[in-house]
Length: 222
Image (cartoon, rainbow, N blue to C red; front, side):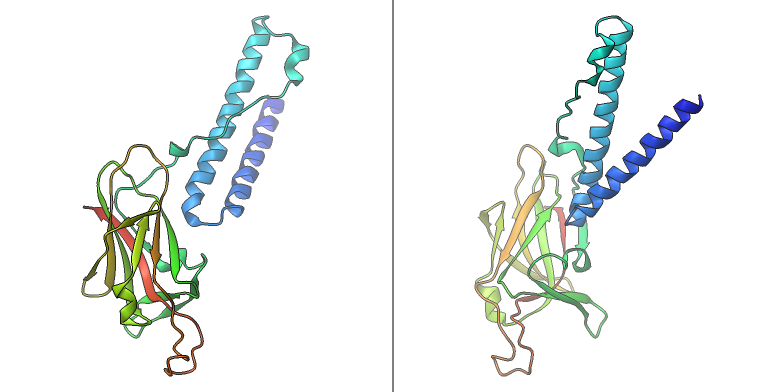
């Protein structure tokens, strides 16, 4: 019994280490659940395979000397982590990704981050595609209003129709995410035709190349 308890303790420590390693190697918070799920699925599959081998030995179908053979465990499928129908993601969650400047706070308390220096930002959106949804990128300002006249949004690389709104707090760039079969994360890319430096426009000393002052995004059913 003590030997069994020691094995359980060792396996528990190993599983914990695997999960920590998976989280540390994950670049985006969106991937945390997927990474942990993959570790758990792999661990469960490996355990099931070991039990199967022991069963075969006990039944006399496998010689003990064959136990040294490696176990092959496939990768976890894409659908093992949950996609969501409706959710909201603040800019603080995505601002560590490329083409964002540091977080700032407006006079009314809104947290935002300017996009730039490149004119595009990419979102990996964990939305269910079983029905039509709306993607809304919230922002409180643009480096130039003219940028909004030519903005493009691509959903999985395909151009989508773009609308503008105002919800009383933030302005929004909206597009439709159509339904589709299968799982997986949806990519949404928001592309301006350029970014603008306030300093170059004679508007102070800010030399950053700015696009939109983004507050986050949300997805909801159409």
